[in-house]
Image (cartoon, rainbow, N blue to C red; front, side, top):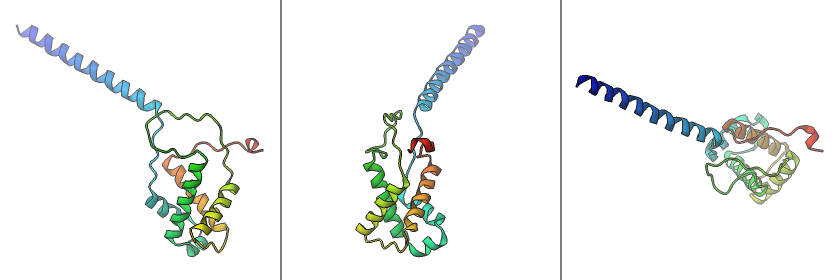
Amino acid sequence: MDGVIILFVVLAAVLVFAIAAGAIGREAHRLDAIAPRAVYQLDEAVDFVADRLPSDSQARLTPAEVEALLVAHLRWLHEQGLQPDQAVDARQSIDDELVVSEDALVAYLLAAADEAEVELLDDVDAVNVVDAHLDYFEAIGAVGPQAPLDDLL
């Protein structure tokens, strides 16, 4: 009788292990197929960008102005199709390649700064904000690879 009980306990333990291993393996495979979600937090982005601006730009821009430029940058990304309407766990489906030039973005930010009544005393401030903001995107894992220079022509 004791041998039968031990056999059932061993079989139950093996069965539980097999079920757990199968469930963990299935979830690991599912999570591997989905790109990790990049979490963008505006307050964190403002702090990150403001800390990485050159001292001249830091002296000219307030945190509220940096925030206004970052929001304009996000709006521009959305208009270009680079920011989804909602965050969902799904495979990335990028059908068309999109090459983003910093010149177009900086020109957009200069116009958006005028609309938001952000007084940019030097246009290089917009360039510095863009560079630091792109660094933030890279830090949170929200950017893809940089296009080769021959794709820009």
